[in-house]
Length: 498
Image 1 (spheres, one colour):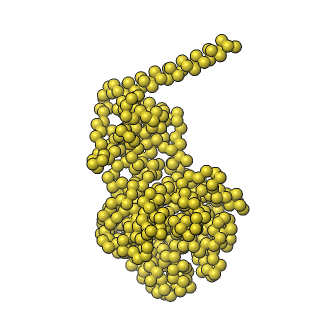
Image 2: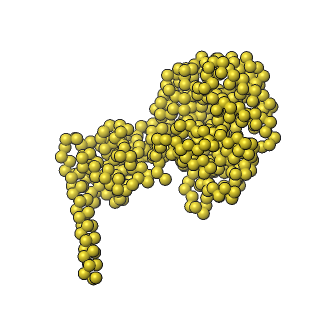
Image 3: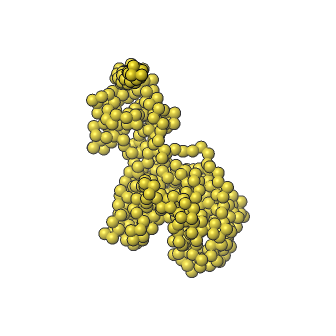
């Protein structure tokens, strides 16, 4: 499927969605050497991350995030929930100290009241809705209720009978809390916060859930999961869980509350009994998740309505208790080095977590071949790109197809023009990628060599005659003439036979 950014969101009346879907990150702090807030913000800026969720309301972090434009979700920690849920004034003080004192310099857009309270802190469940309402009342008093939404992240485990999604419902014992909570979310225009972890669903399924289905890998139609009630086809666990949440809300007669996924990810390392917690699987899941969200694919129940998602998480939390996998959900280590390089062709520069800042310009997935050929001709002609390596017998001739040749020509032009975003467009058939498209002896401009240095690349002068590019175009012209003559020959032969 072509990866592209749509200009307008498809409006479905039953769901009020964000104008633009986004990918954010959670920032955990259980590190033995937690970076200073200014270092954290520097990493966020370098990775062009515009949405973050904090598990608290750390003052130093909120100050560091000021005037960055980054949208921030703060959290009322679970251990403060009981006090806030029993006292309107305590809630007002919390909002005053952690939101009003920093807004608008720090762009706080939402407050998580606790986290997975119903499953991890059941004793506080009875005050959860009060805490949410008290926090919201404090925002109303400060005239910030329109700018800052209030909700609480829920574990997807509270959704029972989640497949097929159309049969899903919330654990009925939680309805005394969920119903008034959903009433509040609907009346305040907020959203359901849901933590979705296909890794755990896969691990706990005893082989029922295929790994590829959990990782967003392409499935043949006969391997897709089909909801027998709606006949909707599901190609991944993530969509099935999100739709299960929509159906569970509809079961309680709530049909216009959008879902935001507050946590989702995959661990890159695990204990011996966690064989699928690997770097490759983590990279596959997170790369596919990002593309799935930003592509506005939506879910089978709500196609085109993308579900904004916060990835879990920015850093590996080596000080966290539990199995080895609990310490290895991060995209970066404490030094800001990537655990792996995300494969993000088509998603733009967001979270292109190659800290070497290597980006490439390549053909979009699914781009029209004729438009690609026209763009390739332009790059190797008027664009004055050095295309000699695409000639027959040269390192980049194979594979001899328009996509491979366009990739090289597009990337050469992109680097020649200083990697400006508008130099990687080519009438909409090109996109910026963090994945190095080099192959064999065909080394692309900007590619990192084995010693970590940038591969040599000399951009030709815009005023050069560029004889090699001319040779490339002449060779293509000759091939096309030959092809045309062959076609004419077949036609003439047919006429003679008739």
